[in-house]
Length: 468
Image (tube, rainbow, N blue to C red; front, side, top):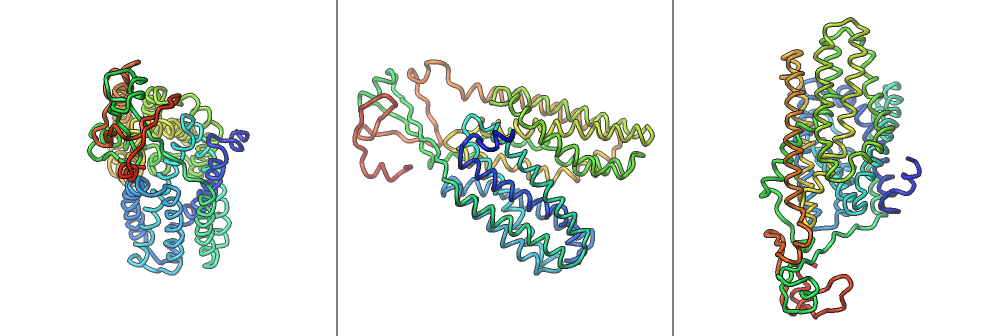
């Protein structure tokens, strides 16, 4: 693993980006561990206000991903990512000088929006720089991110133990500085380029299309962005992906509250859930990524997610009837299963979001895909607390069965879309491949070039100013 960290897919720029993400997640780990207590003890909020503040921030975060995708389709993604880090730096700096709900709300919301934007842009960076090895890069990202979160939580524990006003503000300042350092590191990377694809549209063989400047050729430019909001199939994929991200809420909300309110397991087991999750992610993420690498494997692995979450839910449903030891073992097994589901989801959700999007419009499409996790973070906790746990063990069984069913539907729908996107062998030269939303026809006087061909024709200046 460490050798791959030193030489990741994408080389120098990928290595710098992994360092930036590690720094970012370390600061985020500090803030995540201490934010609730900061709001309560320093900013003077009560429990209801803290819940409203975090809920509003989650809703604001939903807009971050599509906004980043829209911007990245028009300006360099590297620039937008640096801007996201700097927005978080400024917004969180302002938090240190705010007291009360109304004063904190805009800055906490801006931080959440920029955080979701940054995560989407990191995903876009990986698709462009790591190519077909993006699953391996994603595994390295999650490994470094989890290490950062763990270190950040440890640093936060020191500050919380001190407990003074200065200590709490030092925790905020540590996160602010992590955003600044992450922006500096991102600035050292180079902007990864999106590809330009030329496809012959005449019925003649490809070589004839190249040799004759009169042949019509479709050129798909990165700047000619398709609209994901009009792609019904992709929107349905994103909609189904929301419940397929519930492992996050289940680990952080469902397991602790079920332990406390419905089992006899000791409360001291709650930190063990996060410890198990962190260790398994670091140890297994690369292996799981290798087993599910590529769109075809990812399609099959989506069902694994549903099966793992179903097993986890059934164990939780049965954890209420035993004693303290039995409940503790059951909950630890549930933590292992939900982590396995997370390991699968972290690869399949991202791999399919990339593979099912048109290559020339991935920035916009990934921006929409990133909404699934943001929506889950807002809707998942109230779903678990207000519906699933309120229904008791039956609620867990129904949730597991529903997620498993959705995973099967997602797998089949993704397989059909991938098949439709993959041209039959030899069909490219015989039939046109037309992109109705992001294409233009090249006139006989424009450049028509292919690898291995020496035929070139002059492009008018008016054509060169569009989409290049």
